[in-house]
Image (cartoon, rainbow, N blue to C red; front, side, top):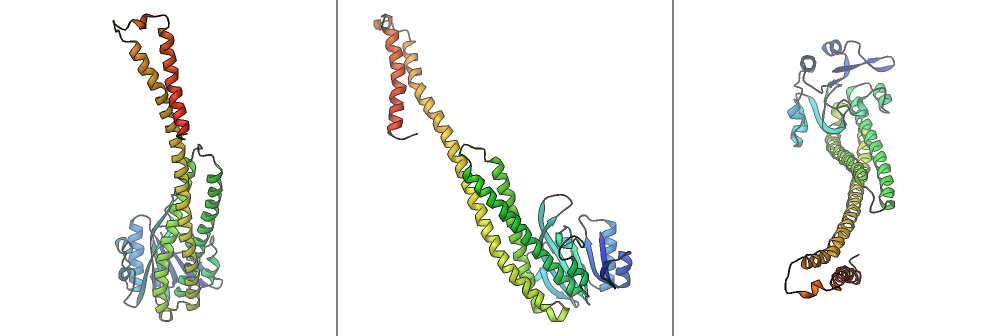
Length: 322
């Protein structure tokens, strides 16, 4: 899907004819959101490439890890690719490469996910995007919006983990921790995604800072974004450590409950094993063991069957096995 934004008396607005705005070169920001390869996507890419005389990076290019493939200048255009967190449709959050192309004061974004900062009209960055006059200002506004969204996710995840922490250490060790472990796994995934996004954005901003003046990107905005990201990276690392601690605590309590159950089963097995052995012996047909036919024989067998488990029980308590 292609969405283009053009200047109007009230600021940036979505163009009625997105492809026409690209063809005429009147756009300020062209957003190419392509979850799947379609003919319309190919047409939009061709129009952007013709209007700006550049090659839009392929999906394989956007997945590259090396910095030389993510941040570079080619034919007068600034190419930036960052790993951001977003959703594909109604699915869970994932991380994927989002490319920013800046040339001649125009911005092109290429993505397969839907970060909240790109939802103009819904996110806090909307006002800054509408007030932008060129592609450099739009880029700064989008980056600010992405960082704000990451801060919101970290805040929500931290609050949820604090609630789980209180729940874990209040629950009895015999409680069912499966739901808690699932929640911790989900929050751990979110913490990892935010940390990955912040790390990628940090490298992007370091590169952009060197070429701010050439491409009209507000230097003060990039400085502020870098400062916020450093603090958020520390919070993300702290959150990951907290999630790991809670996961280990929940697993430890689960293991303790399992060990207690196994210990009970083992004691029951040990308690009845001697009785079973004695009953087996007395069930044998030994012709020369005459006392088996004596009147006190069954009582002797029963006494031994009770004495053996009782003795084992006393030994177990003495050794503090339970």
